[in-house]
Length: 150
Ligand SMILES: CC(C)(COP(=O)(O)OP(=O)(O)OC[C@H]1O[C@@H](n2cnc3c(N)ncnc32)[C@H](O)[C@@H]1OP(=O)(O)O)[C@@H](O)C(=O)NCCC(=O)NCCS
Figure 1 (tube, rainbow, N blue to C red):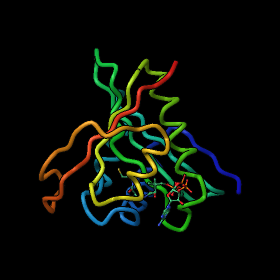
Figure 2: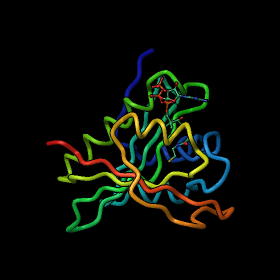
Figure 3: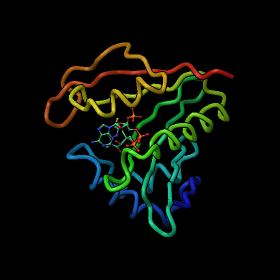
Figure 4: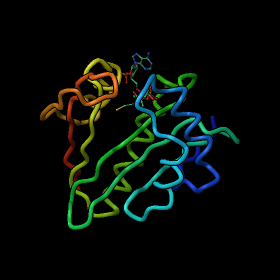
């Protein structure tokens, strides 16, 4: 399977928003949000492609004077999940975070999303807190973080 991961361009926004619809039941990033993040210097959006199909994406956010990168979204097309592509994309996310001098990646994940929680734990993320009533439907979020080794 020939896979590529690259910094998203505005022409990927539609496919990324469609992917988001296939991957998340709610709280999805919209087309407008993707367009905004792709243009925004303090965000890094990544597209994962197989042939000419967008099969994964990630959104990483940075703040000036902060060494914390926030993984705002990561998703692999359901038809491609469970084959190690998520970890490939996560590794690329972390490489971009390091490239922007971040020393920590933080994220929020639904507490009922056990697949994602296990995925993050397996790849070095530790839970450090939670947000109650974080999602549209009132579900809580688990906060996780990973220290990036130089
Ligand atoms: C979380 C996610 C990005 C992982 O991507 P992936 O390509 O499936 O990741 P990997 O194949 O590298 O690893 C998935 C792990 O979950 C396990 N798994 C268990 N149930 C699974 C399921 N229904 N689907 C996919 N993987 C599953 C896999 O076996 C694998 O574990 P292993 O490494 O111990 O074998 C992907 O599942 C996804 O996009 N989920 C929907 C969106 C989401 O929840 N994003 C995170 C929100 S914070």
